[in-house]
Image (cartoon, rainbow, N blue to C red; front, side, top):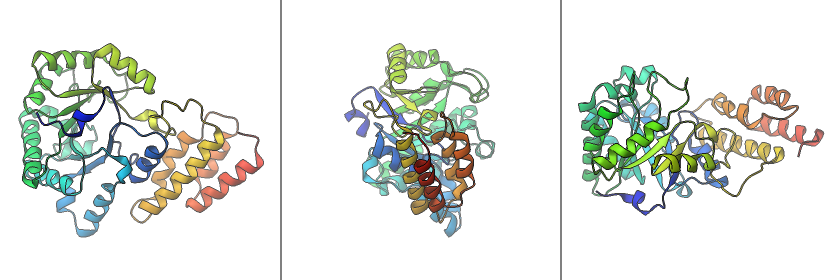
Length: 329
């Protein structure tokens, strides 16, 4: 099996999860600067939208797929239930220079599921296989080669790993990220990593060469390593732990001062406005403020001011005034 960049990485891999309206180009650049993961993912992108939206809509989608060279290896993630669209998206990803192509088969968003994509694919295993093969065909037609991977869950309403995983492995994705919850569970219960251990066992029993990455509730790199040791998986995808903590993937960064955190908040905000200010609402940026600004006396008051800011200039002024007039370090 062609492994692409995956075969060159040292195991275990610690990678950044794709998160809608979170891991946009601005945040990814900030993360790359302060604590680079082994692999970076884009936000998930609609393959249908990329090719069927009007010109303005297509341009907005393409902005989500912009990246810097420092983010490599970077994987583009797409969703659709149409194999032809998946094929075109894979071809496009190669043309854009991405290092890998990932298919979302786990998103529980109802609007995505209405399109029979995301988590809905767990109900249609034959289509799931077709989409993996279509992506591979698209890559092959491009004349270059990048690895195709999948991100999914252990099942829809219940644990269906014994049936679901072999079906995916049969289509030979290079890597498979498994969220250790069902679609029904969402994030309401703790992720059960015993399912990741079982996934590794199934993979080995089938003599598959697919890399297995676990996902769900990993707190930091230390916790991720512990989960690797307990399950035997090849790597861990970290998601929510990145909020307010661009230093997550930096093993040497143990303490982050309030001043550092607020300085990076301003840097992040300016970059967001520069890269995405003309296509995305400034309010999307504000979800990060809740994470950046918490855990010390006076944080709540500062956070309220920031949530009322209208642009990066106001945010910088609020933070500058706060640092000048407070005793935080």
